[in-house]
Length: 287
Length: 251
Image (cartoon, rainbow over all chains, first blue to last red; front, side):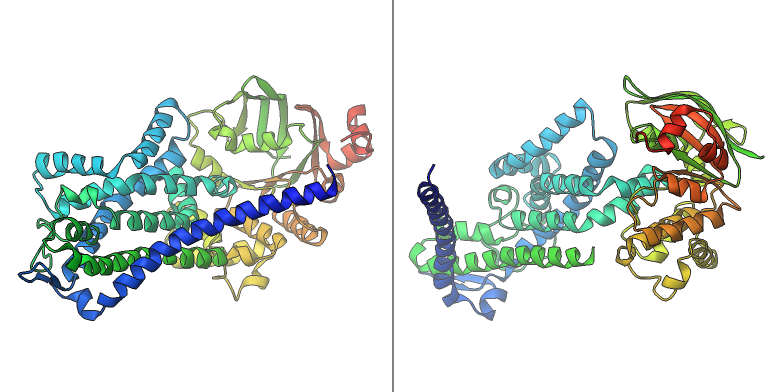
């Protein structure tokens, strides 16, 4: 192939890659811009803390305080259940059962669990937590459902983070007479902790934005007060958007309100992702 | 001469592959025994069998025995954690924990239940002194061990191993990743501690064996060719194979 032909090929490849990349950036950017332009107008302090109300024409007033609180509560409580179980399961898979058919099947099931549509999680949560365990439609049922959604993410990041720790360190620990659990907990886990933390934040960003799992298990479209106990129903940001855009009697009047909620939700998730980036760069410097 | 470890007919296999073939010799107490031989002769496998580092590989199996204090350390009845308390190890690549210098040294004590701050402090000082690292780090014991140079890290690993007062210290090519000056310091440390502890060092550096070893074992293709006093091996080996290796015919 001549030099000219090679240069041409190189240019075409570069150009097509650029177009694709710019296209993706444009798509993401326009979503964000749309939400920002439409949502910024309603955003103020009052919007963030006060209680939602509707007038007789169906126009939404007030703020989204209870929905923010509800989202924080189910996400937080969901993590309380998912983090310890997920981390212990991940440690078990990486340090104790790296081989064997049953554990490969288990590993595959964890990966599959991550791919189950979230509405299926919602149905499962309704059948098991709300009905079978009699937790009813509540923050508790929703948090448990979300924790199952978060589990595979936490298990897989923990297992991989633990595996990435060089064997040198395990051997150093064993050579001093450490038992397996001591090596895993005192040597390997601290090294893997920052990567595991990344997985936890990723999981919380994921479950904070979920609608389907809380739809049948405890979220409600309207509450006239902040949630006070975990056996109550609650409002949540993603579900509130859905509610405003489908069940409001005056949808056009509620659109900007919904954009405002979307902006808050996206900002929350973006903040979590930024936290990951900062966390990563910090821990990288330390090690 | 006191005998510390008695190797009896030791054969080691990984799966079908035989790595060591009927090794028998006695390692003298409170001296330095160097194990030399070309790459792949089984010298690393040999020392890692002594403190049962190979146990965690599924396909590892052995025949024969290693007698220490009258007991076979390779038998399943011998508690492996107790064995490793008495037989310490330093590895080829310095592998300090990503913790402070202090925490590195006390790790062994802590996992064996020592909590007394005074004992911990004293052990840190004495172990680092034995590894001639104390003067360089005494003002920054809380510094992360990763900030030390390679040679310092390796001496920290020696201090970490010494902290639990082992009777034998195994070293698997401890200076192969370290510059000559740092190597010299480590050799001096080993000569010093060998007055109290039995040292078994794997090296592919014949000069190193000549500098520090009291006894030398020459391994070739999984077999012990010759074991004797260092001067004897270096000056007048019995076997032609040994002589050829020492004069650089192969390896």
